[in-house]
Length: 180
Image 1 (cartoon, rainbow, N blue to C red):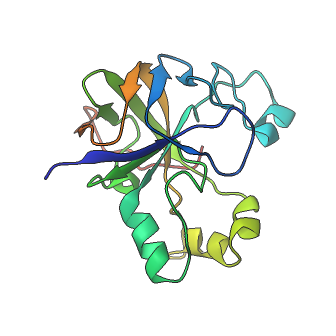
Image 2: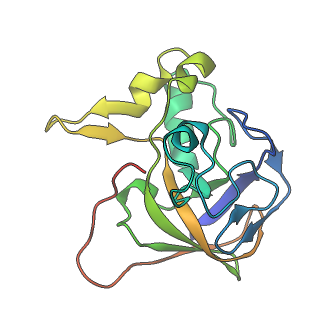
């Protein structure tokens, strides 16, 4: 079985989690239709406070279902959408993708990966100990961010659970993901 969309979620409000939906629609250059983070410029409140004119590199948040399963095995009850992601995938090593990789979600939608999600303290209020699990030091001492990836919508379209996910890698050297 190939990589698939396992769940989709969106929220019109700036809520921590997002309700799971039967489907979402991605809009080119904007994000998820009806979601609070839709727009050309940044919509995350902390970033708006710094500079509301900066480009929105966080239009779509994706998490791999395998992470949710790892967290469940460690005692954290976290379902799709509950960490604020719009798309939950299965079978894609999201954290291992290079910057500029394109995720083809179903027949039409295309999302360019811009970087790693930098989880905030709200995660700790959701589940004590979860922030430390999702942001930690690796063996080499570098900070590891494990709460999914962010992207921008290159081509819009409907995205629903069960749709195939294909990955197009960029030409040139592999540029590791950094927080956005």
